Image 1 (cartoon, rainbow over the protein chains, first blue to last red):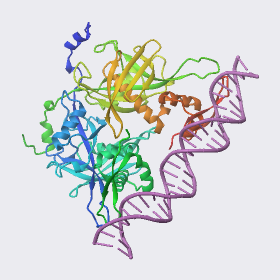
Image 2: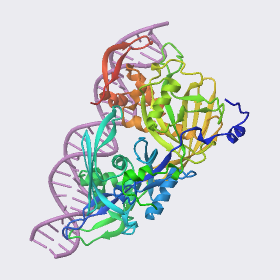
Image 3: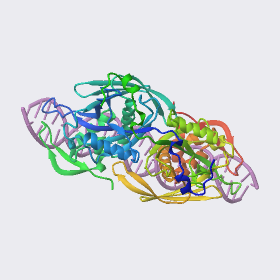
Image 4: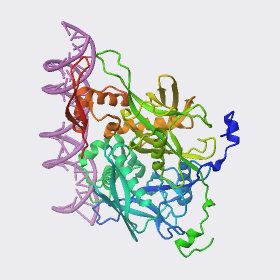
Amino acid sequence: MKEYKSEEEFLKDYDVTKFDRLSVTADILIFSVSDGVQENYRKLNKKFFSVLLVKRDNYPFKDKWCLPGGFVQIDEDIEDAAKRILKEEANINDIYIEQLYTFSNPKRDPRTRVISTSYMALIDKNKLPDKISDNASWFNVSVLEDKKEIFVSLDNGVETINFKIKKILKEKTTDRYKYEIIENEKLAFDHPLVIASGISRLKNKIEYTDIVFNMMPKYFTLGELQQVYEVILGKKLLDPAFRRIIANKVEKTTKIKTGGGHRPSVLFKYKSGN
Amino acid sequence: MKEYKSEEEFLKDYDVTKFDRLSVTADILIFSVSDGVQENYRKLNKKFFSVLLVKRDNYPFKDKWCLPGGFVQIDEDIEDAAKRILKEEANINDIYIEQLYTFSNPKRDPRTRVISTSYMALIDKNKLPDKISDNASWFNVSVLEDKKEIFVSLDNGVETINFKIKKILKEKTTDRYKYEIIENEKLAFDHPLVIASGISRLKNKIEYTDIVFNMMPKYFTLGELQQVYEVILGKKLLDPAFRRIIANKVEKTTKIKTGGGHRPSVLFKYKSGN
DNA sequence: TGAATAGTGTCTGTGAGACAATATTAT
DNA sequence: ATAATATTGTCTCACAGACACTATTCA
């Protein structure tokens, strides 16, 4: 092995082909909250937790649905790539984004070795135009989970996508599971794993952070906010308890929401802890 | 653009050079707990929280310290690469490991574009030989952190490594910060960021999981366990409160630790929640 | 008027923080 | 006897779960 005298000399001589090189994609899980149709003049609109999927019009996985994503360029930070893709594919700027996990199963892409760093993004759907792009569609999410399996059903009103994931206990001290796709017809790549990881991350973070406000409009009623918590956590909450917990995260405004066949509701806005 | 009739046909024709390709490393942050020297026949050994570093004997960053790591091979899952490297570099098998974060600043490696997926591993040092390898050394960690900065000092008894990181509030709803290295003499790459992220992750997880037991020997006293919590959290805990919290995670044994100039202590072992 | 949601009051049990008190050992 | 740690008891306060109750609107 050649002896170098300095870092500069070493770098000048460096052979970039010395180690295996592979491609990296950034895939983005965009979550939001959608309103259902109003059943009755008195009742509130149901809220749905939803994810944005894109229909693939090219191989591989032609005609399957996948998360918005794309290849990371040679001089680009992966998070910047994710933001670029959000901008390019859906004209979305300035939204909440966090790195989720790097998926690297050597067989996850049939073309060649591609690893994927996934990001979770949250957005208030009201800030977007109704139609983002021809290929993209919001799917309402419902999840059934027990100790052994996660069953997810996605529905955009036209099409239903179901998949099932097996949970294998990987590590007992932190109760971490390895996920394995056992049923999946309509999603490309290992994207069922990404979706399941994201749902799990969000469910956790909603309990101990203010992350939910990234999906809320500027003004909202506490009932609406509670609905969002309920739909993400998949369970009903008690009103007084919820109000106590949320009390110091929100600020009362002078605005009021009327029009439902019931007592009007004060509109609140997010109050940052700082 | 050519029209393909099937996935097989498309794949046969696929040009792998179509997208940028780059190298990926797995870097592993190995944490453990070390014993200090006994000051006095009555007193307990102090515990230190420690990290394993390796001295680089090649360019780039020759003679600087870094985390154990290496390049991911073309057909290898990154976590498998991390485990392979643990085995190769330190003959460590079967330890706790979890993915931490993927660092991808385009300038993080002076050679060429290399992204790094970091892992955090925890181990009971007693399970290892005293000398792991010639280049490797355990450094005791001390951390000073406030709203704006993290100052970390690492000491292996011979050498001290100090670095300072600036925290820039990136996102207020989840209180997430962007880290920026502002002082660093002795560590290679962006490894100060990896260490800071790992410490932060561990501090969080120790509060709501049983992760700490991965650093404990099979039998331990509650005093020892409390010391480990204290050194990781960087604060004293009240005995009765600690015992209450920990009570259902541990199991009393018939073994007893004597020999200190004080009341002997019952040895406990980890009791998994399942 | 009544269905539906908004919003408040209060009881109870759990659990953390704080501090005091007792127990046991090697020198 | 004493220093040091081990272990337990108990008081108080904060807060979540549970449930009851009141308020207000519009068809």
